[in-house]
Length: 249
Image (cartoon, rainbow, N blue to C red; front, side, top):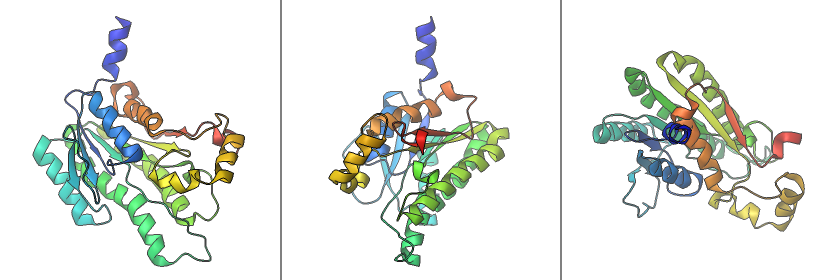
């Protein structure tokens, strides 16, 4: 009996999930685990559409408000609702203060923070009418701890965490839960250059308690928890998944 209860807590049958940036990396892993748990999954992609018929892919430039609105309306037209929103789309490149320009600043902030706000705004309107929903924002430990030469990225992820907390406070009365996941170094295309650097890898092995980088699937498990009934009394929280890196920072 207990095993049945455990399984049902994570069952997403008849749920509709929208994941931004789900073509690769963490987003792809989240799409897979939500699909495996029974949800109908829609993912945005920017350039190359993945060849996966089990997931509905919609092309979307998340920096453009018109694209965000069009994407949300398309999902509603196809499925009639959105139960789960995962704001995963994000970019990173170094932005030291002495070399950053406004274009680079806005490129990162518009993708990592403003796009998430726009998706939250549009999707929450539909969630309010159903008095139910889960919003999951993929932040970073860079939103909790400043990393050198990453000004725009740090600020964008810090802002995303405060967006999460503010919306959790504002939307709770509609039974809409809003949480964030703050990954450490995860093996994706975004971190490929870092993980090809022997000095960086050595630093990870000597600094991170688990002595390694994480895998996308290790973030997807937390997303499943936050998307499901298992987290029905959880909102406004930031789940740090970093192998223990920040426990001594």
